[in-house]
Image 1 (tube, rainbow, N blue to C red):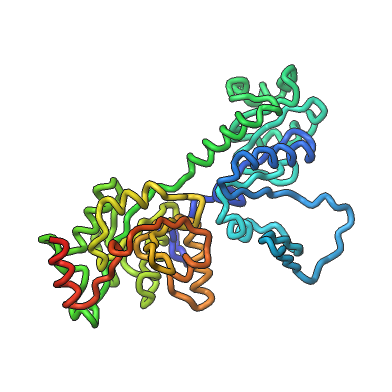
Image 2: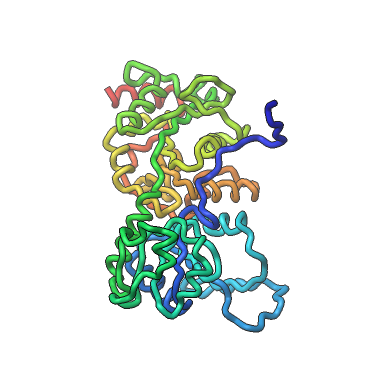
Length: 367
């Protein structure tokens, strides 16, 4: 008998316990763990990093007011109260490339084990939490592996091992763990409806001997991107993604793509910018910054980025939905107010073609 489900089975972002990409550090005292995290984070300053720890204050007064203190140079300090909730933490940590966890207090999906003779009992207590050790760090090079570790994990001595002072090597190992989770890029061709100014579907216009939507799809596919058409109406075709966010224009198309695959980055390209060529596509891919919410094109003479020639990273999905919750459906507004990588190009490449006169003029120039 088929199991009944009340709820739509949606694709989910590939999360660890508390974040998309996390590692718990355990096996020694909290000060050593915190010190290691801060030293490594200095070497990985190009990425967005967070440290998830428990308060070590002995007496905590219930805080009924959440305080947000913004320093004039941009630092933010938050003092609030609340319980650990993996769903809330995943929202809070969605924008980070890597989250370090104090494994003395919280269990992480992946682990770094620090060997410290003084904390043997602590490691024994957490033995079952060591199911995905990425590497081992010794406080002293002569530190021996605990017998119970070898009994539980016979291959443990084959795992990469560093000493606590090898900060560069440890940082490089973590850097590789970050790179492993960088999202693949897929293509999304925005196929609009009937344009009132053009009087016909702009995606079907012929600049190069075929419908422009095919030209745009081939531009993305030629760069080895699995590419889909974003369409308004439901379709059974494998290369189409129908709108699940109705009447929201391109914003809805982008969110619908993320609903289909929230673990991909989406290279979004409109069909009304026919001067975008192979060179521009490769330029955006070259300067893609997965640590940002998006990588966007901006004309040198323009004030704002172009949201429809943009790679949106998985972390952008949560941001877009937050804007939607506030009543905004403009992807450009999200880009302007988020941390994005800007690629500047000549304005001519991003000319929007909206009228029959502009189409005829553009076709002459392109040919």
